[in-house]
Length: 117
Image 1: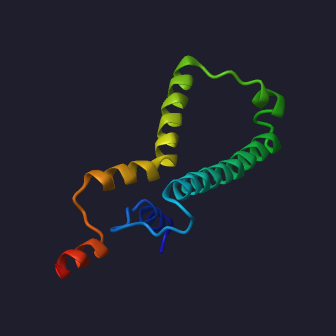
Image 2 (image 1 turned 30 degrees about the horizontal axis):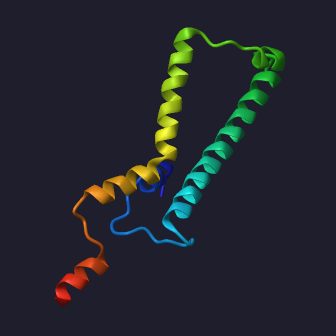
């Protein structure tokens, strides 16, 4: 399985109810958000460290230049949009819950209960 396929699967919404491992739903959601943040942060830190090393080793930019960089207005606007997209990804679990509450999808347990009646 290549990277694109793995990424596609990672963004797939599971059908039915999500398994719950912690005491309550809110704790479960906070844990999911925390783990999403941890994964994003780890990936970003690795890529940033690699870029900084490559740039410094090749003499393209010094660490001082990097530390003192001031983005343009256009770059600031782009970063703002990127931040919003990032927050949307982090809070995806809450959005999925909201969608589940407003949809008519029933869990397997609910369907079985209806069939018993």
